[in-house]
Length: 181
Length: 126
Image (tube, rainbow over all chains, first blue to last red; front, side, top):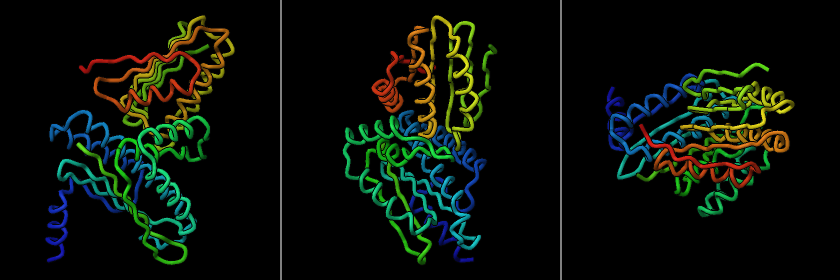
């Protein structure tokens, strides 16, 4: 039972407002968004910050949601078909952290995209967003390829990410997005 | 043709498209996981509207939040209106709240991509 207090202390130290590990469903997304909205209302958060956190959270959650959708073809054990979400508020900034399993074969494409986005300034991100919005089409799942660009644009900070190799076919992807107040 | 009315939800906007006066309104939040599914009837309605439009068409977009997947569908909607140009005078009102720079910037993005007049309208918070 000591572990419980350890977990509690860790969450406390990191100023975690909300954390979740498990299956990401559409209903869960609705609930998480409602909880975060009322939390920020409660904290009397500035409307501008509230909107940014909400917007970025929507994109992060939907990335997780659509990813889970794919996982039937990855053949990871059932207990691994879940994702991690953490929202923390520390020193003048919010941090949204996500973690999820993905296909190792998809890693390069994602890494290239993240590095590309991280190498862009505000104006370049705007131009890139507009280009993808204008030219690209939606996948059958309704994903636009705009998510990471939008997250980077609204965050205004570099996206912090990491890939942890589990085995040849599976990799764990972690992403941390900062939103300054 | 029949008007299109969809009640808003936590993740989908209120849609009221009126073919009699050519006023089309999208209000609220548009953050569904799969926006194609949600916007399908909206696009279908527009496809039929553009065959016999009102002399004036006004699209009012008053969204509090929209996700990137919805932004693609908004492009689809605006493209339909672009094609109307000769049969109907088209105007778009993009509403954003005070201090909502991101929503204002989104409107500017569409303005640069879409060839119908988009008016930016500042709405004061209640």
